[in-house]
Structures are given as C-alpha cells and as structure tokens.
Image 1 (cartoon, helix red, strand yellow):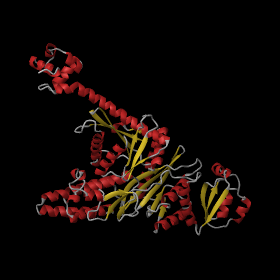
Image 2 (cartoon, rainbow, N blue to C red):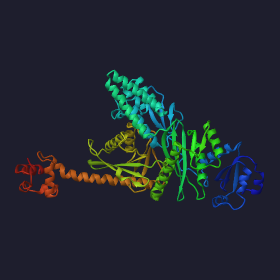
Image 3 (cartoon, rainbow, N blue to C red):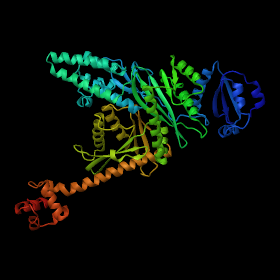
Image 4 (tube, rainbow, N blue to C red):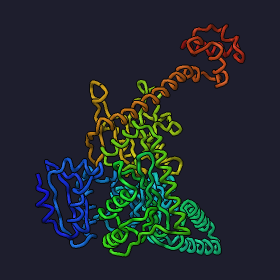
Length: 604
C-alpha cells in the first residue's frame, strides 16, 4: 500500500502521466497533468465524485511518468489508455483500422481495398470511415474505369477472361484484351478522380469524345460518352465541397445515458462518409470528456491515421491549444480545431449532428439482447462496430430432389425479411451441395457487384470446411475478399452448442472460438436460414411431385394440368381416376384422357 503523504510530498511540479493501480498491479485509471503535484494531490482533497471514489477505494499504488511537455503527456496518456484499457477511463468500443483504396505498382495495376499500409508499394487513398463507404467508392470507380481487382497470382494464371470482364467491371488485361498504354490511361484517370481532380478527368474525356466523333469513330466516342455519364452519376452521389481541404467533423450527442461520437470525414474536398462510435463511459462523464478521450484515442494512437488539416467540433474544448499542439505534432503539419464555423462547414456540422442523433435513436430502439449479441460477435471476431449486416446461406434437398438455397439477412434490429431470398438450384448433379452453394453465392454476389443489392459485412455458411472452401473460391472469383467469411458445422451428436465455427485466414482453415453470446447470434442465423430453406424445398418438392408426371405427357399443357389437379384435388387422385372420369374434366378429350391414363400407369 502506498504511503500517500510521503508520495505526494515528493511529486514534482512538472508535466507527466499518472497511473492508479490496484493491489494486483492492474491499472485502474490513467491521467495526464500539466502539474503532477497539483493534479494528483487534488484526488485526496475534499469529497471526490462517485466515479473517482470507486477507483480510490481500490487504490494500492500510483505510477508516475515525467514528460518534457504537456503535449507529450497527452500523447503518452492516449497510448496507455489504448494499450491498458483501464476500467475507469473512457474507452472507445471500436478502434480498428480504417480501409483505404490502394492502387499498386504493376504493368497493369490493380485497385483494391486494404486496411494496412505497411509493406505495400503503391498509392493509398483514404482513410474511409468504414468498409461500406470504401466498397461503394471502389465499386463506382471500377464500374467507370474498369481496373482489375484480382490478386497478381490470379491475374498471371488466367487463360480466358473472368466474370469481372463478363459483367463489364474489367477490361481483361490478363489475356491482352487491352494494351498497357490504354490501361494505364484509365489508371491515371482513376488517380486524378481519387485526388479530387474529377473536372480534369471530365474535360479530357470530353475532348477525346469530340475527337473520336470528328474522326467518325463512333464506337470509341460512345465509350467516352458512357464514361462521362457514369462520372456525372458518381458526382451526383458524392457531394463535392469547395476547395480541396481535408477535415473531420466530430460531434458528441447524448441521450438516456448513452453517448454517440459521430465522425464525418472529408478528404481532398470529397465527403467519404460517416461513422458512429459508442464509447464506454460512466454516468458522470461529460460530452467534453468524451470528445477529449475520442480525439486522443482516435488520432494520437494510430500510425496509419493522419489528423486532417481541420477538426470541427460541436463542443468548445477547454484544452483546445493542447489538442492542436498534439495533433500538429502527430501529423507533422498544422492542425486547427474549430467550433465556430459558417457556410459550407456549418452544413457539415449540422449534418454530423443529425447523423449522431439518428444513430442514437436507432441504438436506443434496437432490442437490447440482439445488440449485445452483435457487440459480442464483433469483439469475438475483431470487427468494427460498423459490421452490422450478416448474410447466412443454407442448401436443402431430399436426395438431390428439388434443391433450394436460402439467404437470410440479419441487422442490429433483427431479421431484415425484405432482403431474404430463395434460389432454385438447377443444372447440377443431384445431391451436390458444393455445386449448389457455388451457384447460389455466384448468383447473389454477381448481382450485388452490379449494384443490385447491399454487400454484407459477414457471410455465414451452414456447413464445414468443404463449404467454406467453396465460398472462399466464389468470393475470390467476384473479388470480394475483404468480407469476413465463416461456416458453422454441427458435431456428430448434432446438439446445439457443440458446433464448430470455421474461418478462412489467408488460405488456411481455422477453428474460431466465440463467446456464448456471439454463438447464440450465429445459431439463430443458421436456424433461420435452415427454416427458410427447408420451407421452400418442401413447397418445391410438393409442386414437383404434383406436376412432374403430368409434365411428361405430350399435349398436356400447364392450363390443362392445373385444371386436372384442381378438379381431382391432387396427383394421387388423378392417378386413381378412370379414363371415363378423366374425360369428364373440361378441356380433356377422350383421346387425351386415354393418353393421360396410360402415361400415369406406365402402359403402352
């Protein structure tokens, strides 16, 4: 136990960081101080607030680290909070890395989404607030400039164009369908667009279109016309600010004991999107406390996050000068923090506040149990809080008959039934589950790649390693390799709770342990997908058994088949009917009645 009197007497009047420790040496709280002696001594004068009293009751020791400046103390405090996660500090629930759009160095460079900038030679654009924003931008750019996304090994092994070429998302440089010069011109256009110089791209394309039209090369002119039209659509979807500044808008909203930090990111004059954070706080933490903690943990502890030129907030910070100095030191450039803005920046601030209020309302109205399951699964899998859409697939058949695949979708508020889909599987060997899974995944994600749906953050397959491998192959074929892919398989007893969860890590199959809460969510998805699939399968099987025998009879079309089934009530009743009874059905002649009877009774 620390001797407080002697300890406080020897404390210096200098900047530094202090750590409150319990008897086990666990850090309870980390704080910074301009004057260590005054700040630490203040905890033991007067009556502390309830939060402070909680960790003081467990206090056994205090660790001190002296720093040269208060800015250094702030940087060290932020790093210690991130690394130690003290119980009584404000903690961000999501401090995962951000996605970037990456264009590598290659004769035919690829365009891809990455989260780590280390050991990659090429150009990075971002960061984007979440994978959805990055994927949307990537999809629009790929649709416009047709750059490849495949890995180099995939690129080098191709002997014919892949699916991306067929759906007009790539010009197939892998098999020489475009020259290196023409391909790299598209790369330069994409780079200019990502740098916010879209008008330069537009001007150049208009000139080329006019030249091609003047030379009566109308096919090429039409190609440029389509690119221009697509870029106009991108501009319409991507609001462009004046100038080319980079700034973040950070607002804090509070409601019913929950605080939301809303981050809106603008880079090179383009709005990249927004992201909501729900930090772990106590009832006594103020909005300013949360904002200070967010800035420290978000901007000052990540190597790959460079603070923007300006930070716009909805709360005046009492330590604004300190924050600006710390952010500037981290960015190695001047960073300003502003709360009083007007014009366009005021619009960004108002938009961020509306987004924050909406995010709070959604969180408060979501079911507590489901929200807890999602949060647990995110933590288990190391995913950000923005990973909130899960799609689960199952295949159902009876000995290969009437094969149907299902896709169910869950979000934070429960099943999204309007996004449920059933797929009739045809053209495969009966009973081949792998082929059925390959078909449904290819069909679904090919359509999503053509902007006919929403990409999930997690894909769950009802099956084991084999099904997981099939799914991995399909996702690589359509270049969706940044989605978390899992499969869940039952053991031999088929008892709930004894399933094995598989995940692809690179090219390896690995089992994954998750919490009971997270497992409950996955089991609920798996069970819902199974229910949806088997319901569709039984319906299809019933229809097939009612109609398949009749479909083989020449001259008996769909209208007469329906009439027969309605008249007798089902296929078994039709089979039991005599020729005379069949002939009494409207539209069935005597000759056709005899033909039906003999066909159903296998008589020549």
